[in-house]
Amino acid sequence: MTQPPTAPAARRRWRHSLRLRLVTVFLLLALAMAAVFMGGMQRIFSTGWRDAARPLVADYMDRLVQEIGTPPDVARAQALAERLPIAIRIEGPRVNWQSHPDRPEHRERPGFGGRAGDWLSRPTADGHRVSFGLGTVPWQRGPHSPVGWITLALLLALIAAAYAYVRHLLRPLDDIGAGAERFGHGDFDTPIPLRRRDELGDLAQRINTMAQDIKGMLDAKRGLLLALSHELRSPLTRARLNAELLPTSADGCGAGEAERAALLRDLNEMRDLISDLLESERLASPHAMLQREPVDLAALVREVVADMPDAAAVTLDLAADLPALALDRTRMRLLLRNLLDNALRYSAEAGQPPRITLTRRDGGVLLEVRDFGPGVDAEQLARLTEPFYRTDSARQRTTGGVGLGMYLCQLVAQAHGTQLEVGNGGPGLWVRVVFGRDLSSRT
Image: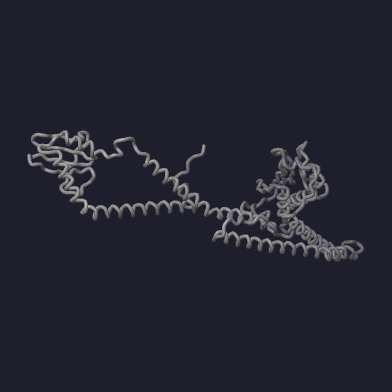
């Protein structure tokens, strides 16, 4: 059962909602205008009309006293009280009577201009005093009129109509907020709908134009990186080939051999960097295509481990009878190789080798790669999947890498419709990817 919002929560919601504040302003303005109007009209009637009505009411009271007679005739007074919306009270030496005995006593007020319930008195020649007041008004004699309920319903309808109109006016703000969130996630294909030709419509149009400009700049940047990477591959391949063809010393242990090995290592690192850049730009593109096929993830893990000589000691914990998943085999090899290479790099001085685990999870498969190294500071976990980001302890040349491995793994996971999760294992670091059951149904 939903709990009603508390007062602080309702106050925060009111401050955050522009619609509620506008409707509140509308209601306060309506109430203020009604109060000013009623107060002004009451002032007008209580001053100008009082002087005009005073002699008329006084003459009418005198005529009513004459009609009742002297001495006062109770039957005539009763007939007047029943015919007119007045209350009559007669006090004197011979007659003491009132038309509304159940009504509480009203104090007399001399002259004219008292409240509705005050009495107006007239003396008679025989020593009686006849007092008049407000009796049973016409709408009190019959059934209650539904005017009050109708008025309340109309007021509520006006409030609802005002809120609906304000919501209609501010509806483009919802579209602008949703569009800004899409643009922030890199989805520029769906522009903000233009519903009206007012200031909010102009704002939506300008944001759409800005989004297209940003998309153009990102596409230009991606195209430049792809072009540079392709152009660098050819001279890099030639340089690596020439380095391998350099003559070596007879014993293979001279200074030239060491320089040749260092040169080949640097060229290989440049080759891997260019390959990672190309792959990252392809995966980041909204038009990235995956070559899906049924993949036995456990068999693929064993293949990747077998292809990496340094991974011979890696612990494999692979569940049996895992479902085949519709995955891109090449990209999955890239993900596994990068995760395993990262775990091996930071397990050099750990007490035990990294571990790869495959288990069932909600009809899909959970992949976990964990090392038992020093781990990462908690505030740096969220940035591990950023491109070219390396922790302070990873900036040494001995660890290698340029900070694209985890970024590539994140892109591969996103291309398959899932996310990469990173956390501290105490000790070490674990990385998890859950491939859902929807992937097992694809062919």
